[in-house]
Image (cartoon, rainbow, N blue to C red; front, top):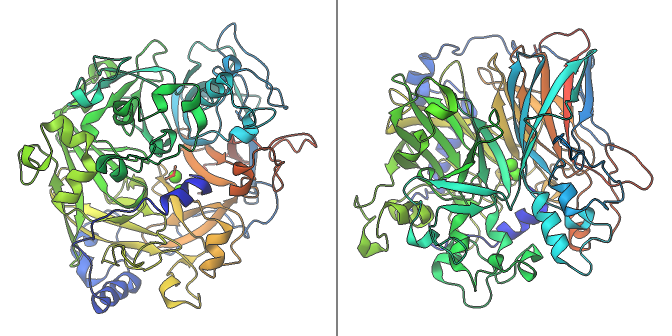
Amino acid sequence: MAKDFDRMEDSNRSANPSIHEVSVPQRRTVLQLSLGAAASALFTPWLAGCATGAGAPAGARIGFEGIPIGRTDALTVPKGYVADVIAAWGEPIGVPGHMPAWKPDASNSAVDQAVQMGMHHDGIHYYPLDGSRRGLLALNHEYADDGLLHPDGMKDWTAEKTRKSQAAHGVAVIEIEQKDGRWQMVRPSRYARRFTAATPFAVGGPAAGHPLMRTAADPTGRVVLGTLNNCASGKTPWGTYLSGEENWAYYFEGGDNLTADQRRWGLRKTAFYPWWRTDERWDARKHPNEFHRFGWVVEIDPMDPTSTPVKRTALGRAAHEGAWVAVTKDGRAVVYSGEDARFEYIYKFVSRDRIRPGGAKANAELLDHGTLHVARFDADGRGHWLPLVHGQGPLTPANGFADEGEVLIKARQASDLLGATKMDRPEWLAIDPDSGEVYCTLTNNSARGAPGQPGVDAANPRAGNAFGHIIRWKEDGDFDGIGFAWNHLVLAGDPANARPEARGNIQGDLYACPDGIAFDPAGTLWIQTDAHATQMHKGELVNIGSNQMLACDVRTGQTRRFLTGPINCEVTGVTWTPDMRTMFVNIQHPGETPSDRSDPTQPRRFSNWPDYRPDGRPRSATVVIRRSDGGAIGT
Ligand code: FEO
Ligand code: CA
Ligand code: CA
């Protein structure tokens, strides 16, 4: 997520204080436990049961030579690895008969952009067509930088600019293959497809057709145009792609008379994007229910180019970072998701039905039926999943919830009433294939402990949390367990930081603000960062360089730096071919600064990656990483 969204989140704070605040002495106790070792006495019972318990040699899984921090406008990988750029913003995706070439002066039309790679690549997954030689990539295009997107930036805004900006958002499906040792896009391809902020999506689950989902253009409340601010993504066992709608609230113009509900969801007087000036459905004063139709996890079947994408309302409405699937022993889907906003929540959906053989079509309604829960982390290292079920506890008409659809549309308010734990911006989740532990990055929260804001708690133990942390838990019994035991993998930041409250406990190469995480098939955890120079300076970790990706052996906590990105980029999104010989990583917003975005006619002063053209514009892109000797990545 970009810096400007971070800045906006500064004022997107919950009004009600956390009920899980703990005193400073309690916090110190928890910190000591976290810092002590993963196998602290408190957590020994479940760690002892892991397939990969303590005692493994440090860094045993990590087989590459770490690299120094990055300071140049380049992407760097370890010795023995090669990295190639494919699928940068603006490249035609390969729709048969419509493959407009990228124009470096950004003069492609909105119609062109709708069949080209979007901007700001994020979550990504590989879907094999021919094993590890040919497949599809589905990936998110989180947002648009309109200063770069149009030849004259945001000057003299037009309907064409709105359409092009919408077309630069969403999701892409592209076909790729390995030829003569290099990966390239297959063009044309019958699979090539873009989903944008104007593509029709069906609505599934309890909020489908709900009165709060109906608009003048869609009186059924069952067909929404577009998906927005798609951040991270998950791949389901039945072969589909789950994408989270994250900072959608910033697309709506709210005006002066915001309701309490709108304020709770971060609607602003002024939209960040000027779409509403030419497309009035983004004006919440005129179309208040349009605002309810975003914030969902969307499901896409990349293998069927004729399939209709669906917004899955049973998973709850949120500023969804993404969605990640585990499977219970009896075959039900458990979908974890977090809400990346300060003091928001972590969720878990448990499907009613079992996953059926037969792929996407056989499971077309699986995510429409089940129970959503929100997490409460207690100070004793235990936690509980609280069900968001209409009629249970406070989730009643008397408290403003007419039915289950309204509970899901107002999941934040429901979670407030249930007493869920307000987290430090939950980003990605990942499930350890060996142990079944669930990991979640909490990227940072500078407002933690500020006057009028929730204070520290056991799970979020640092005031003014500049560098973020990674929490993990093990469910009681199976993934559908309602209780769990938790601890911290790491508090990010330099262990030698001069400020005790900013001091981290990283073992190995330093990083700040963990965001993307994913386990590779061999069980190594890969950590991607989204830190800002100013944030690092305030936190006194001034020497960390550009954003990066590291490998972590979660048995030992050891991290090693694998990749550093170009200047002012974010490293986000990673996937592998099944043989692990190819890794795909997304580089987002190289060169971006908040001032550049607010003054879009400014040239990008910091990065010209990856083209390095004198007249060029920096471009987000997918990077293909391989080992020169053809071996498995990271081993
Ligand atoms: Fe789009 Fe929370 O990062
Ligand atoms: Ca982020
Ligand atoms: Ca992110």
